[in-house]
Length: 263
Ligand SMILES: NC(=O)c1ccc[n+]([C@@H]2O[C@H](COP(=O)([O-])OP(=O)(O)OC[C@H]3O[C@@H](n4cnc5c(N)ncnc54)[C@H](OP(=O)(O)O)[C@@H]3O)[C@@H](O)[C@H]2O)c1
Image (cartoon, rainbow, N blue to C red; front, side, top):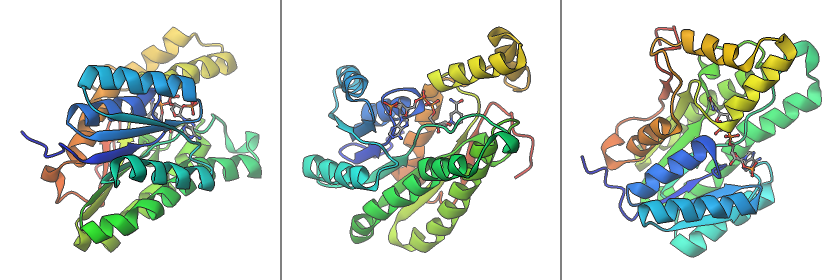
């Protein structure tokens, strides 16, 4: 199937490693010009080179922290200067730390909202005017299965991701008639550095070994394995494509069957 992505420009935030990197890789493999960002420039540049060497595509690394309004304004401008426009926006960010309500204070909630919700809203605001003019756009907001089925010890993620779902669903209906789709992805347990660090932190606080933690996650997943980051990239590439023009306002879990709800 030709996804019709050749020559489109994609901006994938928080993408020097993990899910963002896998998504950028897949969009580049499908023929998009891709801009990637992260806070640390050295690994970001290495990732850009790695993807460009593998796909033969153009990959632009831009240092930016998605929680800084100024930096994302400059990020979007840099992408436009280099690739003329943003056709596809993938809003990804780092994940908030573990914690139950008792262990978190107001500043933790404010920071997590900035990281995962406000950054998404601000990025959408920056790219939407030109998408509306061209009557074409794809926005894919990265959340987590925690938006559909809250996870233990992840109060901040459970709270902020639900906000992203509400924002995205509302925005989707406001821009659908302009050829712009807005969808959320809700990945389950996926083998990235964040998940490995998450397992280490849980191990310290519970005295259960990292191996046992991974085994317990695996047992809870009907597919009996964790996701590979590339599998998230394939789904994003489809949602970004011409073929997915009629999918909007969706929150799609990709979790090996982990989420048990019917909707
Ligand atoms: N892995 C999973 O199982 C899973 C499942 C569901 C949802 N998620 C969510 O998906 C997102 C990505 O997770 P991941 O597992 O891919 O994490 P990861 O492997 O730790 O990668 C995070 C990436 O985001 C960048 N980043 C972090 N904070 C940033 C910021 N403020 N501004 C710009 N870039 C930033 C990091 O680079 P720098 O540090 O250089 O900035 C890095 O490139 C997180 O929100 C996570 O909670 C993950």
